[in-house]
Length: 358
Image 1: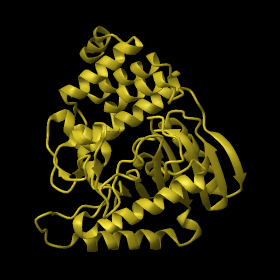
Image 2 (image 1 turned 90 degrees about the horizontal axis):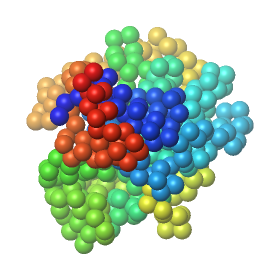
Image 3 (image 1 turned 120 degrees about the vertical axis):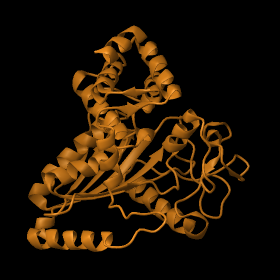
Image 4 (image 1 turned 180 degrees about the vertical axis):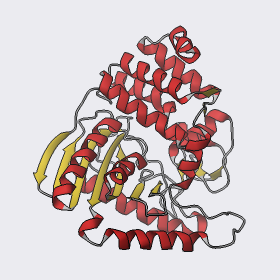
C-alpha cells in the first residue's frame, strides 16, 4: 500500500505516544523514521516500530530518556544514551557537538548505550545544515553478531556503518556518504523477507556457513551471516573497516564491542564516535566550494557503463525523496506488523484508519 507521508507521520507519532513517549520525543523519532522511508531506507523506517514496542516491553528501550553528558573537556564530549530512543539521544548529542564546534572548530563526540540510532545519515544532515563536516563511526551491541569476517563462516560483528557529510558548493549539492560495512544492511534483508523476495548471490550465508539467497536465514535461530562489503575480491576491505569501526565506536565511547564478554540481551544498542569539523577554520570557503564543484563536474563527466550513470553520494536518497514526496510504499507484511504493534499499546486499527482517511 502507498501512504501519504503526512498521514504516515501522524500514525507513527500516535503509536509512539501510546507506547509512552512524550510529545517532543514522539515527534523527533517519527520524523526520523518517516524521513528514512522518504530517503528510500525502508530498513530504518517505520517498519522498526514493532521492534521498538517489543524492546520497551522487554526493558531494552527507555522512552523519554535524555542524553547524559559524562565528560566535557572542551573539544571532547562524551554522552551516555541511557538506552533511550537512539534517534532522540543521538540528535541531542549532535546538537551539543555542533554548538561546541562553533567555539572550538573541531569536536570529538562519543555516545554510548543508545537504543537503535536509526539512519546515521540524519546526523550528517544535521552537520551539513550547520555548515560543518562530520564523520561518524557506529557499532552495535546487545544482540548476536550479524556479519562474518572475510574468510570465515560465522558472524562475528555488526554492520558497523560509517557516515561522512560535507556541505555543498556553489553549484553542487551536499555530499552525504552513509553506508554499512556489510554488503547489505540487516534491515534490507528484513524488507526483502517481508516482500517475499530472494537475495542476490554474495549477500548471506546460512547457519551452516554456506551461501544462500534466502533472507529469512538472518531471522532464525541459529541465524545466518551477512557477508562483508566488497564481495569475493574485496571482502577483506569491508571486514577491515568493520573491525576498526568496532573499536572506534565501541572502544572509544566506552560502550563496548561485540566480543562475547559484552552482555547480549537481544535488543539493539548503538555506540557512536563522531568528529565534527568547521572547514572555515582550515581553508577559505570559496576555495573549498570551487574544489568541490570541480571534483563533482569531473566525476560526472564520464560515459556511463552498465552500472551508470555516475551518482554522487547522497543523490539516490534525494531522488527517492522526490519520488516519494506524495506516497510512501509499505509492504503488507510490514503494515500488518505495525498495526499489531499499535494494538499492543492501545492504538486501534479504527483510529489508524481514521488518520489515513484524513
